[in-house]
Amino acid sequence: AQAGGAKARKLFQDVLVASASVPGVFPPVMIDVEKDSKTYQEMHVEAVTRGDEAMELAANSMIALLYSTATPKFDPALGRRLSEEAVVMARRIGDHAAEARALWNIVVANVYGGGDAARAVEAGEASIAIARELGEREQVAFTLNDLCRAYMAKGDFETAAQRLAEARQLWEE
Image 1 (spheres, rainbow, N blue to C red):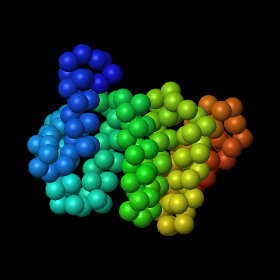
Image 2: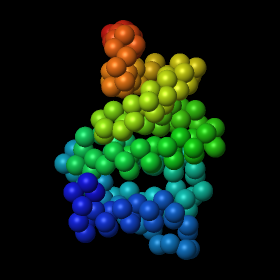
Image 3: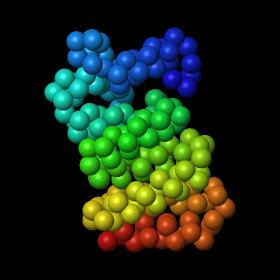
Image 4: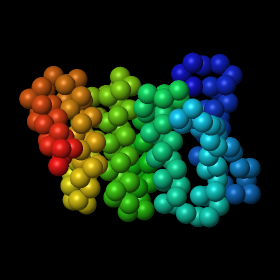
């Protein structure tokens, strides 16, 4: 989408229609997703048709991560927006693990996409608190690792070093 043009416009329209998909109102929207040099199609309406919000949240979270990281689909603004929406949905359905992942994804989109370092720190600290409460050590490590970059962007090198040291300790255990 970052490249612009007709293909980017079509992808943006597909994502909007898919995210608003209501069975019987909008037809299923197939979105091409590339991973490991393979193309997959994600049908967002499947989760909506089933009324499975957890499945919809999982799909939305993976799409948000795809746009937030250095992939051919890299679009950090879209990744941030989709991640913020995933946080709201996770809170609504009470999926705290998904909330921690979505908050971490906000960190990723902001850190690697030149976004708001303060929002990245806020989201990262919230992700860590939830992940610690759930005993999700791997999520804590992922978030700490990326959160250190947000602290560096804010000029808080001491906290950045502390977060990175803790992440390293978790990865080595």
